[in-house]
Image 1: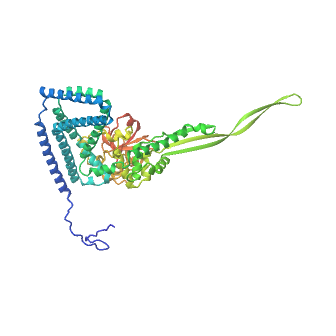
Image 2 (image 1 turned 120 degrees about the vertical axis):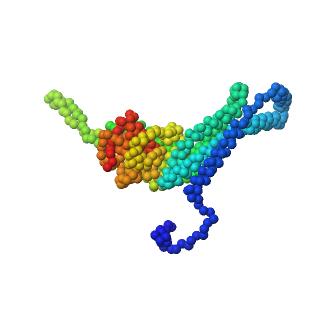
Image 3 (image 1 turned 60 degrees about the horizontal axis):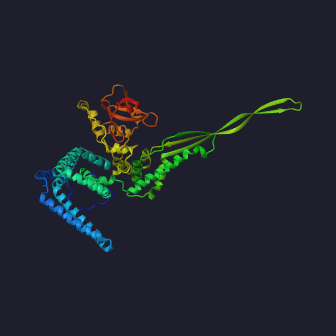
Length: 554
């Protein structure tokens, strides 16, 4: 139960005894930032030491003639012994089994020996790599905490806002991570030995053991993938584990793919029904007005994951899949009956032998069937069927594609959400306008946020009109929540746009009137709630074909 505090400091209602002081005191934001700075400096010192140690490393010595001869003799003896064993091993199954176990053990011993030597040789380079990763993590954490201390408003807006902010820090230090990778590559180059001979041996080994090589490569790639994922995670800063967990699909891969397959199955049944419609119905005339049957798997899985908290199975979401399908696809079959006729002529002869011709109308019912399929767009459904908390979770899942962009790589969202979008730097002279500068400061906070139909706050993310409405309300206007057409009506149309004006479009989707809007930045650029929120060049064929007007705010 929450309590309100009056001006005198006493609580209303029942008195609450003072709790004893805890020996554990929550650290202030300033203390956390100071500790983070010290940790960054310490990681930097450790990185310098690792680099100095790597610089002192000498390349491995080549094997001398004595050592080479010893190896050759050992190999000869080894081959002779095993050859003799092979001659008699088929006489005794136990001997054969023991021999093969011996071979495996010897191979494992040789492999382990080579591995240990390699690890010793490459340890300094790996130490640098590890130190660099820790330093990047500590630096990102300090920068994030320092930014939050300077701008407390970053902590507002819920999980989506904090997650996006940390993602910005991650992108900020991506360049540093790439430089670290370059240094590690140089270190690896310094520790490489006789590459030409090793390459020749490798080719020969591949020819002898193709299956084994494939299995090794599969395991190696898996390890590389795991390491890269871990390396990406540590750059985000402290507390990111929780954010990643909250934005990750909790269901198993089999259930995620199974849900997508089940929904595709429903769509396939619908398509088959429409394709065979004329052969399975008996009407005289048909008209088809059909939207495309399509959806994006990440939108589907994000909706399901937002509705069903935690892990779920395909069986548990069958009802949800059917409900979503019925809401997305609206099939209408309208039959109109027309009273029509045709002329029929009879010829007959009377008793006197005269021929007569009679013409008359024959009436019948003519059936005209019109089949209409409306695809409501799956991404437009959440705002109509979710609570605010569910909508916030949906936005969080979409922001990172459930942290599983590998599940459906052909999705259009993968490139849009994993690759950096267009960039534009507003000229300094445009920022002389304090009103525009304030609008831009608010607008740029949400670059990278996902597009959410009907969204109008940082907690739920935004659509185009919700985005602009929020910006204006934060910057002195009091307009509430307006749609794109409402924002256009609020403005005065102008032919000479300047930074801070709004730009409007028509026909970007099937609706009447203004369908899209953005904040004009000057020089043919805008900042808008695209998919995701970001910059866009208005001089492209697409935007020019839909451009409607510019509007100046009162």
